[in-house]
Length: 44
View (cartoon, rainbow, N blue to C red):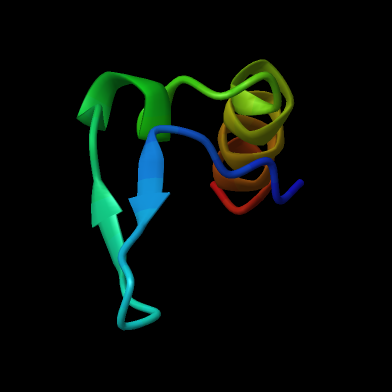
């Protein structure tokens, strides 16, 4: 479920967030949300 987006790599090798919206709402977001909600409901 690792689909990183919304960042750029700096010359020194660090990563900088360019768009927080893109970081959160990646293509895998619906699957991660479903996984999290179903795990929460199963634990109730």
